[in-house]
Length: 132
Length: 132
Length: 132
Length: 132
Image 1 (cartoon, rainbow over the protein chains, first blue to last red):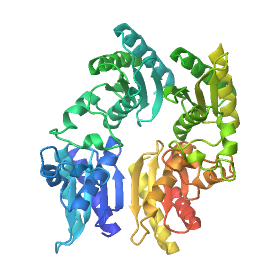
Image 2 (cartoon, each protein chain N blue to C red):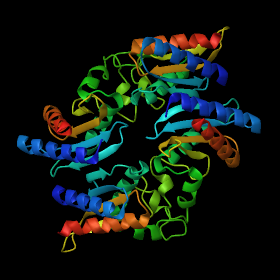
Image 3 (cartoon, each protein chain N blue to C red):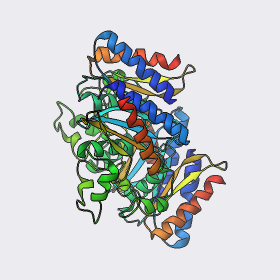
Image 4 (cartoon, each protein chain N blue to C red):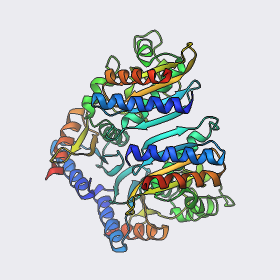
């Protein structure tokens, strides 16, 4: 994950959030789940800082979007309690896996602050800036 | 959040608790979720200290009463696992958002020690002392 | 420790801080080191919140003013590492033991936000409000 | 602290680090010590992520550069053990207070990854981008 790729994704996320009329935090982590870059848009609820970080971490640690992780890591799910490992993970959408054009796993992006639907949409739009 | 507003809310909470015949802890935090003032009434269960602090923190971090937060942040809720972010949040009532007359977000109040119903009622009565 | 005694000490601390032209946090704990009451004056540095809590806790847990605790709990002191017990204690002044007129241990007060000298002075003035 | 001011400081820090031939993490927090923006330059040691965050947090919580904090918060210093409060603070340079042109406290920047001398130099250069 190049820092310039990460900042390009942050800029794309910010533009998409503005287009949707929402404010969010955006966190990008590398393939080893370590933070690469982060922004908090003005007016975003403060609780979203930790949530966007955890969404990115969840997606990176399991190489799985957090909306997919949510299906197995919940009461009644096939891997209930998995969400309580690794310091606490996120069992809802907004964490998206990042891959290169040839499918190599590069890290993940987490978005939080809007509705889960909008968070996911922003993360997906931002992810396309990686390939650009 | 002025300290004098916070202490006025603490006094109002205490009066309402006495009227209801219960004892509680009351925590007030500012818009950035930092503590402003706190009291524990004599005879309140000790476990309520941390709970009132977390109720106030939950409401401030998500700008949402903790009773509303409870609907999404629980097993089966749309944001299950959200309650485990930010160091652990409160997924039941008694944390109430504080706003100025013109709707500006000012912080939150948390009440714990009585029934959840009474905790909420005390927090709401106390919140009206802010506007006074 | 009666809550009314605690709030009387908070008011006395606030008056003394205003007289000295400083802003502080004031924390009061009972004989079991559990929080009873707290205030943060407007404009106080945010780092002082945790410090005032720990000063009161230190004085209560060892029934010793934190300025006395400082002499033994430091590198080279007779009880070096004691400051790292109990979740982290405070090895400088501003935590003061509270006793009743007959010498019964009642709890402690912690003050932080000004110089250590002023913090101590404010704590001592506030402590006299207990007996009043 | 506007996000655009924060990202301008991040860009200035990155340029200065490249000029010095070093790689660093840069963390910017607001006046309430909440994260606003963060970058990790490629090749930066991973341990620097947490360090840059704590440097910024230390400077914001005490409204004091971490190099000044270091003089009091150390064995033998006037406030030994202060470095262990607030979840662990940083008692060496690289956290720098951010103020507006009229002296209003706005937050802090933390830099870590190079020598402490270079970290401080980068933080100071970046801070000048705030006023620009």
